[in-house]
Length: 255
Length: 230
Image (cartoon, rainbow over all chains, first blue to last red; front, side):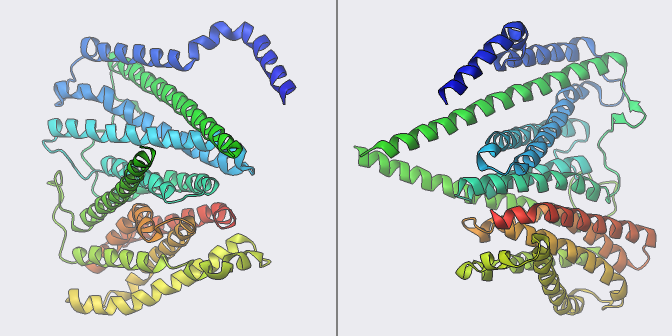
C-alpha cells in the first residue's frame, strides 16, 4: 500500500514537471478565472460591439447572449450526466462506480440550475417580446419538463437509504430522464408551431458576424464555467466520501 | 448540552424530510398543470390557436383519468414480491431478467386494458353525445399508449422497489416521464373523436407512440436486470 503510493507520487512528479506550466492553466481555480474572463468579454461584446437587433426585437434581443448559451450548457450538463450514468452502471464493483456516480449527480444538479436560469431568462425575454411571461411553446415546455424530471431524480435518490442502491437507482434514472427530454420535445411539436425564434437552423446561423462572435464567446464562457463547477463539485464529493470513511474508521476504533 | 444538540439535529433532519415531501408535491402539481394545458389548450401565447373543440376536451380528460388510475395500479407491481423474499425466488428462475420484466409488464398491460374496457363505455355515456361510434379507430391509440404506460410503470416500480415512501415517490417520477405519451395520446384521441381528422395526422401520433414504446422497452431491456438484482 505504502509503496504503491510512493510510486504514484513519483510518477506524478516526473510527468508533472514537464506539464506543470500547462496544467496550471486548467486547474479548477484557473477554469473559474477563464470563465469569468470569457463571460465578462462576452457581456462587453454584447453591449458595446454587437448591433442592436435590426428585427422587431430591438434591445431586448441582448438577453439572447445569456439565454441561449445557458440553454446549451444545460443540455451539455445533462449529456454529461447521461454518459457518466452509463459508465457508472458498466462498472461492476460499487467502489469503481463512485467517481462516475459523483460526476452524474454533479452534472444533474448543475444542469438543473442552468435549466432554471434558462426558464427565468426566457420568461424575462418573453415578457418583453411577446408580452406574456409564459407561452406554451415546445422549447419552453421541454425545459420545464426537463426541470421536473431531473428534480424527481433527487426525490428518488433521497427515498433510498442504502448507498450502493442509491447510486444504481440514480444512474438508471439519469439514463431514463435523458432519453425523455427529446421525447417531450417531439411530443410538444404536435401543437401548432410556437412563437419561439429559431436562430440556428439547418442552413446555418441566422446571425451577422459580430453577433455570432459574441454568441460564441458567451457560449465558451458558460461551458468553461460548467467545467469549473463540475470540477469543484467532484472535489467536494471526494472530500465528503473521505470524511465519511474517516468517521467510520474512528467510530470503529471507539471502545 | 449534547443531548440538546442531538434533539435539534433530529428535528432539523425531520424538517428536511418534509421538504422532500413538499418538493414531491410541487413537482406533481406542476406536471398536472402541463398535462391539463395540453388537453384544454388554454394559456397565454395561444392567441393564434383556436380553442379546442368540445370533442377534444373529453379526450384529454380521458387520458388524465387513465394515467392517474394507472399510477394507482402499477405501483402495486412488486407488492406481492416483497413478502417472504419472493423476488429472490423469481430471480433464481432460469430465465433472463428481461423475460421477468416482460411478464410483469404484460400483466400490467392486461390490467390497463381491463381498466379501459370498464371505463371507456362509462366515459362515453357521461361525456360524449356521439357515444362509442369512434371505437375502432380509438383501439390502436389506446393499445399503443397502454404498452408505453405498462413499460414505464413496470420499470419505475422496479426502480422504487426498495425506496422509502414508494407510494409518494412513484407518481412523482412517473408522471413527468408519461407527459409525452399523454400529449400524443390526447391529440390522437382528439383527432379520432373529431371525425373529420385526416388520417395522416393520426398515423403520425401512432408512430410517435410506437417509438415511445420502443424506447422505453429498450431502456427496460438495458436496466431492469440491474434494478432487481442489486
